[in-house]
Amino acid sequence: MSPATPLPGAGAPATVALLTDKYELTMASAARAAGNADVPCVFEVYTRSLPPGRRYGVVAGTGRFLDLLDDFRFPPGIVTWLVESGVVSESMAPWLADYRFAGDIDGHREGEVFSPDTPVLTVRGSFAECVLLETLLLSVLNHDTAIASAAARMVVAAGDRPCLEMGSRRTHEAAAVAAARAAYIAGFAGTSNLEAGLRYGIPTIGTSAHAFTLLHRSEREAFEAQLACMGTETTLLVDTYDTLEGVRTAIEVAGPKLRAVRLDSGDFSELAHRVRALLDELGATDTRITVTSDLDEYAIAALTAAPVDAYGVGTSLVTGSGAPTAGFVYKLVERDGEPVAKRSLHKASRGGAKTVSRLYAADGTAVADVVRPAGHTAARPDRERLLSVPLVRGGAKVAETPLAEAREHRARSVAELPPQARVTSRGEVALDVIREGWGDALAAP
Image (cartoon, rainbow, N blue to C red):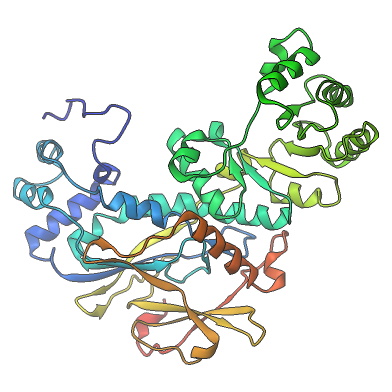
């Protein structure tokens, strides 16, 4: 297969193992040539800091990565292309053809709150087999964790009112599915993305856009057509023309049992009150109000006093403005049982494998994350919870968290944070990070 030969499945990866950076393979190839490829190593995934103003992060994407790990292989045609392209040497071909990750992985549960500068995932194995996983692992965790962390803040701001994910058209088609999954873990009630609904069992939502209203000669005709198809359990979009007239028409056509109306423009703080009053006047006291249109956690919090029943969130959830990267890095911290660390300015790392526990006050409120050298036991076992759990042993997945369980764990993990951590305004990191048991200078950058 020549470098110019199209790979099978145009538009989809020929193998997930190619969803990587070239230098992962060149490092593995050079390490094999030098005789260092099989040295036992420990890599850790962590972020040096949270995005500005964020008080905590929420881990997501672990389950997706473990599913992809099962398919991390180099088929014969791919190996040939890598050799012919000069990415790896001919002598590397047999090793790639037989590649299977055979190491161990431990990490935070999906839905777990995390602090900066604490490992959320630990990968153990030979240097070559571990280094190949870096790009894919970071790609998945950085994206999904960024979405989940933003979504969790929105859910807290919304209180008992549901948040609905509808950001598919604002991101890459594959990222949209992953975003819906991460948002659901973080507490969103549903998604507009059908693939996410099919693949992950997430409730799907959606009825019509302004185009459907404009298709008809009048708003009334549009509402009649939608109701004839979907019944009164649907949501009517009432702001294509005049919003209050749209509400009147909706109730005239559907009757007072209409499930909901949707507002997609205007000053929601003022408009929602007017729409609620009109719905009540028309006898539609149970008809709900859903608002959409570039909402974020701050806009949601500002609507706390408004009679809004649900929030549809898209752009601010799935784009960099609302969900900046989690900033995770993948660093070698141990080589053949000895700690190693970078000394680079502003990018120093902490050597040695670690464990992380969450420390609680007597009332059950989380107060700090405690980082210790791997193997050290908790000094306060009655007040600590070990955050890392076994995920992979000998290359085989040993833990699988159902989406519903990850969602429940997120709710518990956020609920145990101190009250100041759950306010919507920007603020300091929620939990202190305490380091215990470090006698080696490598512990501190």
